[in-house]
Amino acid sequence: MAQLTEKIALYLSYPFVQYALVVGVLVALCSSLLGVTLVLKRFSFIGDGLSHTAFGAMAIAAVLNLTNEILFILPATILCAVLLLRVGQNAKIKGDAAVAMLSVGSLAIGYLLMNLFSNSANISGDVCSTLFGSTSILTLSKTEVWLCVVLSIIVVGVFIVFYNKLFAVTFDENFAKAVGTNTDGYNLLIAVIIAVIIVLAMNLVGSLLVSALIIFPALSAMRIFKTFRAVTICAAVTSVICSFVGMMLSILAGTPVGATIVAVDIAVFALYTLAGSLTGGQKA
Amino acid sequence: MKKRMNIITCGLAMCLFAACGQTQSDSAFPVAVSQTEEAHQSPVQSDSTGQKDEEQEQEVDVDLTKLSSIMCYSEVYTMVTYPEQYWGKTVKMTGEMVYGMSSGEDPKYYFAVLIADALACCQQGIEFVLESGSNDPKDYPAIGSQVTVVGEFTSYEENGMTYCQLVSAKVLPQEDTQ
Image (cartoon, rainbow over all chains, first blue to last red; front, top):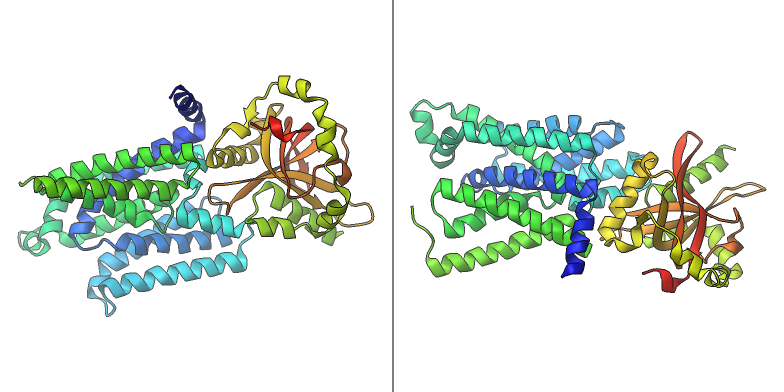
């Protein structure tokens, strides 16, 4: 036990581990907040589609040799999120078909571009790290950490300020529209926030596993709680704890960070499901 | 000349800025493989056994052998990205021995230790030069073997790029790796 404590203390003394824990906790918090809204609006799979779009954008940024890739990835992902969530509702290709098309299309184009034009000596390593987040959270620069902190504060701030409106749009969009709420505007806001979270979360768990970070905490919380507020708070706490535990386990055992966090999320989901079935869930 | 530069650049990029997969790193140095396979009977290990006590007493500032695979990978990534933070520090590392080689009449060898991450898809490596300053593969461990190296961290510029290496390096016998 003393040896383990010593090892944890040693690892926590490394700046890149401290950065990873800060960013990991913030990303987990942000993703879980919006996760509840996405699950309730039946947009669970949109995170997957957008993360693949972000991967495609990252490949283009790498090919263009941009020094700060996020400045390209973020607007591109926001654009796709807006197209899917807002414009997509009136388009000829709708819903799951549009998400699936964007998802696989971006993934394929991204991988193709990286293979054809990348100037990196380690294409497979870059792809592996981007898709599965094996190490990228442990190789963050100070600038990336600050950017993540600022964006996370904005996301949490927006969620708190517009909590009531987001709640209304999530549960009954038609009613909200009928009472004069600018539902299109709030859907646009949700799209932008989702895109920001996706880009942030790519560093933590990789683009293939981003969806897990968004939906698992929300689904876990829904096994036990039934009110929007309770589910949101429980999802946020669960997500933060799972991410922290997942990262510590990964660092200690030498396992890939993203996959370990998702494994912890799955285990917690199983526990919550069991707890929910035993207690019957807390009613509003 | 251009071809030579390309080979050097490719070789060092493989060693220093990560390579992917065991097969790729092996196939990147075909000449070195053929030379070392016939030449090496691990002379370094037998030489260093006599210096065991001295090596054990040597203070290590950055001991990569005590870190988990993912921590080790991340620390080496930091060392390669911000080499100035590690100048002059004594580093101990364990990994797979690889060679790079420039072409031409008087080829120069680059010896490095590769360290894989948890998925083994990403590898970071650090070049090293033995205390004797030898550039002869016969003085180094066999390619593909697991080695533990201790040396002083430094970096140098070549062809406009920054490379990291351990100088005055010693290859420790395997029993000293833990």
